[in-house]
Figure 1 (cartoon, rainbow, N blue to C red):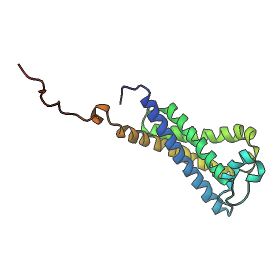
Figure 2 (figure 1 turned 45 degrees about the vertical axis):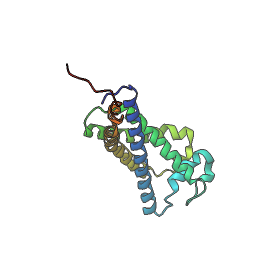
Figure 3 (figure 1 turned 135 degrees about the vertical axis):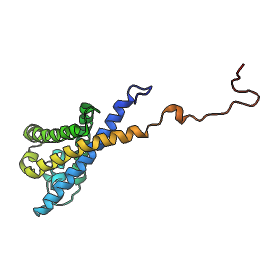
Figure 4 (figure 1 turned 90 degrees about the vertical axis):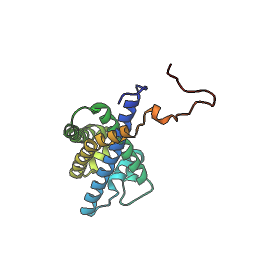
Length: 183
């Protein structure tokens, strides 16, 4: 939907991408928490692992600690930014199935890129202590949520936009001045 402001569609994409990325991160976090509970580990091990990026080994402890929320915040921020990049890359091109497939590829690609290259240099504890299979499945769920949610969030945001002319109240002409007359 074109508007007078040429940047508005990019803002729509950005907001929808961030929203889909954060929801996908919550799905990923929920899955790895369930997997950790299934294996009788702390459900907070992955957020604590993310927190170890800032606090080192002391953050990687069983249970909820003072630094766990930092790990959750890092995960939500990072995956929100990834959702933004996904949205700006995919835009609103293609069918829902194509965007879903792109999301699955994107999530899986990010898993391999981050764990084989990024975390090896930024936080080696991530590569060392991360539950690999659970994180891979979590990233597939992240990508699926991203690919499925992004078009829906974008449509929702676009549907909420009301044209400026519809927002402006229509005022009647002042007294003594008549409307247009036909002559």
